[in-house]
Length: 284
Image 1: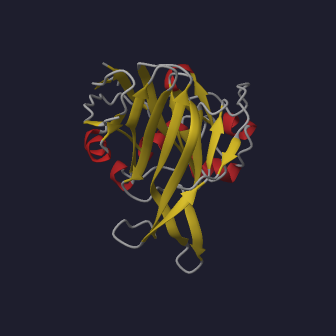
Image 2 (image 1 turned 90 degrees about the horizontal axis):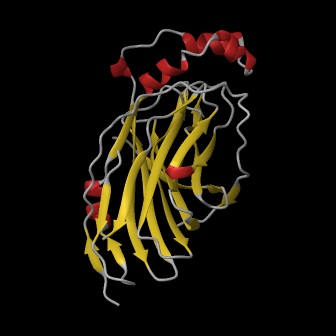
């Protein structure tokens, strides 16, 4: 069976307006998580393929054409500061926590931006099964002001379920990308019977008591996932998103996956995100 290399043509428009969400005490029910420690814009992707023929996407070309969403930590903090003191107190924040969150911000240029992408690496529609492989990446332009626990996630619009997945986090020395970097495998978890995958990111490691800062800061990473569905699917939407905790008092973040490749994070008071990075993959 021959393989054909197909480049991706991506068209994206950044629409990301941050919308302030509901309180942590929302009645939303989240599906149970499961662990997986395997190590390892509405735009169209036209896939020129014949029936039952493997479609292999060039990783290099996919990376070169990947549409990137971007959101500033400054905008995330401004959105979080809109929460009232009463809301914050009702959700377990102390006076000290509220003061820390509401303190005046520096100029926007002092804060980093996080970019995140979604790419299709393989799409193989066959008679009785369709295989899909995606890659989500994220990267900070500079060390975030808040170093707590962030969360990266990816999903599909069809009822694809995860076959395998791996995640990597890159830690930079004192948050400087021009200094030493260490790559670490991360735990990948699933929700909704494998319809979505995510990883929680410990943003700072190895506290330096003399410098009063972390020696290792998470500033980049990726999730690569293989999916399948027991029927022939000629098109699918794939998406990724990144949730950033902006205050240290916040609890561990969680994620939920809705219909149409949607992704949302909680607690919405302080786990901020931009629009989903979305791509539509179509069999021609």
